[in-house]
Image (cartoon, rainbow, N blue to C red; front, side, top):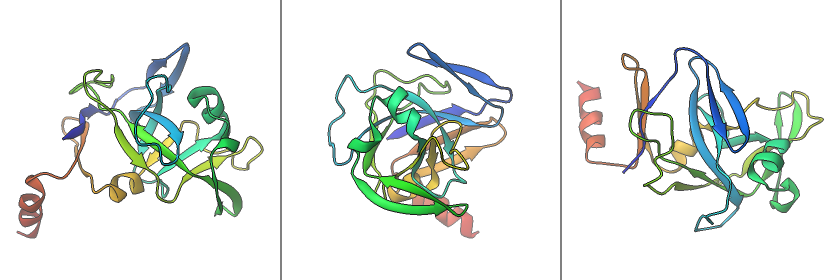
Length: 184
């Protein structure tokens, strides 16, 4: 099943709207739509807010967010998320919290959410990284969905640099074929 279907990577900046907010996506950033919920939740409630994040394969964590994004965009007090300890980022302590992240499919070839298809549940096994307001550095400008989120859920992904889009999907018959072609 395709989750992100030829999701375009903008050459120029763009604005995305959710609710009464707009976020700026810069050139060469990959916008995705997510929701965050308490850890272990199996079914997404219909009233959970959806907001924009960036797919960042250079991010070492499944999901990184500022605490204000959780409060203002997800409607969650970070204190409600179970504490999983602290990690160090650039020498600074940053909290890990238990949460479930939902990744919404896009309309094929467009950055908008495909309203006819359900989101995919990504339970963050190591938790999500939550940067506090007083953190130095303050955390990502926009929430980041990192490479571990794709790896932990055994998702296939590929980038088409000529057409400037990315596709993410669950395992299919193509995987063994691609592995075979890569060996040639």
